[in-house]
Image: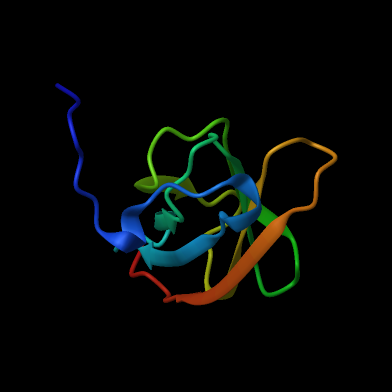
Length: 118
């Protein structure tokens, strides 16, 4: 007898051309040096690659992360901000792709790092 899986329509795996970053959030830890990335991508058949970069207000890259062939479509990671104590507006950019030369689907969000009492 064949087993039937019941899946919500929004949870149905999609082909590569339909996979996107659906949600990208940045939450700064109280120390101001770490940022929790919360990522949700379209459920997929083929595992996508993702790259994340964080830049400060001057446009300098202060953190980067890579995920090769993601297994999950919802996950969290922690980025550690380099350099002097970060403060002010930062930009988190997420890019989803399948092959290095293939088109990338990008999402950007901004967040603020408040001064700490250190």
